[in-house]
Every structure is written in structure tokens, then in C-alpha cells.
Length: 354
Ligand SMILES: [Zn+2]
Image 1 (spheres, protein in one colour):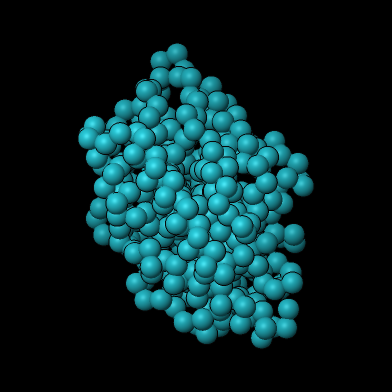
Image 2 (cartoon, rainbow, N blue to C red):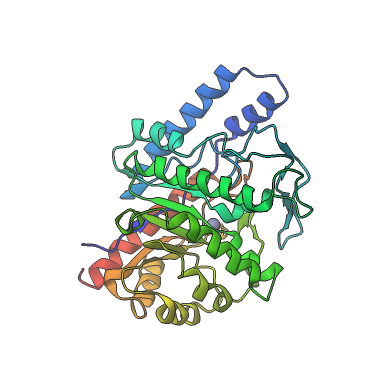
């Protein structure tokens, strides 16, 4: 068995789709026209994804407004003034704020998976957002008549349904996006917030059987948007020991863009448990330069010095545009980088004779 390799999720949307979404928002474009552009973007993304040779693909999240907000987009019990996330280059993204209960998802990720599988010939994975990310919707001051614990119960049930519905549609696996893990350490160095996030996500995961959890994974990164990050300055050593407590079978870990990869690999070696598959990031989506396959091969070989081959995989550090309107990377560059990951991982498999 060669070393497995998987993407994270998002691919930059075609410019005509981004413009159409804006026009739809201001009432100048019909739903029908927008839907046909989504369909075209999904079909084109899947064809190009398959052409890279990637054994596992995604729909490039073409129809997700963002990796985090797809379940809540269009809900009526939200206000715009939620938590602000600050990136290293100074730009910000703001989450909505929940104004009243009960909390329900408006959309589940299995709808995307179903659509992708219409076109795909190879295995498709599906990304979902973590319960911990959406827990940030509940305001600090509380909501009258809707307690924090009542909200968390609703949230856990909805997050479980999101994973379960996707698992039922036969994906390669389901990946929980947990980009707020590293951010949690930045916002609260005492790690109370991080530990709360881990516990909350485990409350969701405990509802699945060990067999089901082998098909569930978690992605960590310092949050990529517009070629910047929100928590790359947080020491991985503060996050990883807690991360591996998550009750999933697969870990998708940003690594290519780390300054000291060997140190991080050493921490992974100490913390990872038997039976956990570690997909190490070998592509940096923020770097415009396309990595050479030989460079990827060497990164996989480096990781193989620390992680047993039976537990090793490769991935991209992050999606290529987790937010739908991010145009900092071109579609061409994203697919070229994915092709390099696939080729480089094959070279490493050959070098390691697996
Ligand atoms: Zn990411």
C-alpha cells in the first residue's frame, strides 16, 4: 500500500462564480442562474481535481460560503456582530452572533457530498465544521430563556447529525475542521478554552462507534485566509498534546510552513497514539511557489523518520481558500500544488519501498 495522500478541502472559486454570488446578494441575479454557476464550478473542479491524479478529492467547497459558516448561512436568529478574528496581516473576519434559541443548522454537509458524487469517479472526502467553532456563536452575555448548556446540547446534536449524514453517503471519510484549536491557545494561554473545545468535540465524537471514528478525522492549522494566518505564532507544543486526545482516527496537520518541522515531528512522535493516522502537511497553500515533487518526497521521508509507515500520510497544510471570496491563490496554482503532492508522495513511497 503506497502512502495515503488527501487534500484538506477548498479550491479557489472561479471569478465568475464569486462575482455572481455578489450580484445575487444585491438582487441582480436569479437563484436559477446562480445554481447553474455552482453546478458548473463543481463539475469543473472535480474534473481538474481528478486530472491531478489525487486518489481522494473534494468538491473544492465551491458551494460553501466558508468552511465554518455553511450550516448557518441564511439563519434568521443571527446578528452580524459576533467574535472578530484577527489575522497577522491586520485583516479580520467576523463571526455572526446568535440572538435567540433554539439553535439548528440550516444546511448539512451531506448535500455537498451528494452533489460531488454525481460527477466524481474517485473517492470523495467531506469536510464539516467543528462544534467548537460554532460554539463561538453564543454571546458572552448569554441569551434570555436559552441557557449556554441548552445551546451546547442543541449544537452537539446538530454537529453529530452533520457527521452522521455525511458518513451515510459513503465518503472516503469525514474531516472536522478545527482551525480554532491553535487560536484558542493564543486567546487563552492557560488553555482552559482549548480544553473546553476538545471536551466539546469529544462529546460529539463519543456518539459514534470506534468503527465509525476510523472514518472521521480532524484538521488543524493556524487558519489561512488571504495569504495570512491567525495563530502561526502559537507554539505547536502547546496544542498537539491536547489535539491527540480527540477521538478520531485521522489527523491532518499543517507542517510544511512550520519553521522547525523536526521539532514538531518530535512532538507528534511523543503524543500520537497507536491506531491514529497522521497526515502531515507537505504543501504550503500560502506560498505562491509550486513545490517540486522532490521537495515533497523529502518532506515525507523526513516525517517517516518520526512516524511509523503504517500511520503516515500526506496532505496540504490547509485548504486553498477556506473563505469563498478569497482570491489570493489561483485555481491553476492550487491544482499544480496538489499534483506535486501526489507525485512527491509517490516518489517517497517508492524510496521507502511501500
Ligand atoms: Zn486549515
